[in-house]
Amino acid sequence: MAKTTGAAKLSAQPIVRQMQLADIPAVYTIETASFATPWTIDIFEREITENTFANYFVIENEGVIAGYCGMWLVIDEAQITNIAILPNYRGKKLGEKLFAHVMEQAILAGAYRLSLEVRVSNLPAQHLYRKFGLVPGGIRKNYYTDNQEDAIVMWVNL
Image 1: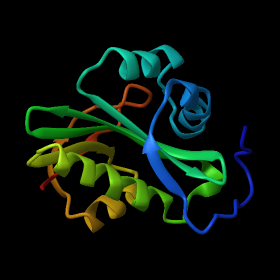
Image 2: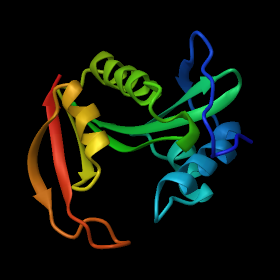
Image 3: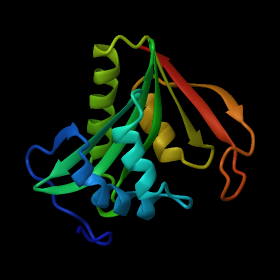
Image 4: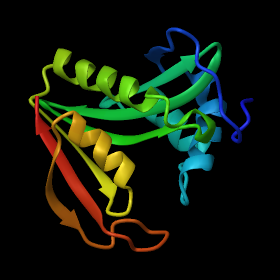
């Protein structure tokens, strides 16, 4: 299991691939290091095995799962459920590479729009999403249950 402190070195080509059940322990480590109210292992298992709308991806660096992203595809719309990078891998463009891959998958699947919610305080994430053309479309008041922070709904036509 990867440490969550200190800087991590990247291989020349981190890879993005479909998440497997065997990846869930590593994904759960990322989840708990990233979110105040993390999803449970059971939720990830159900997403992969039971949710026909769900598509989950991991980004791997020299055998270490450094991040993951989930997306639901419903008819022609894609909704990002979550995206996170291990703290010691942040700032190395892995989130950008992962998000680009997920957007590409949405387009290949026929999605015409992609949306997500992001904390109003999460400026680095908002900056990343703006790089990909997402724009604010509204506010979900008290969206986050841990502190009742508002979420910005961001979306882009694909």
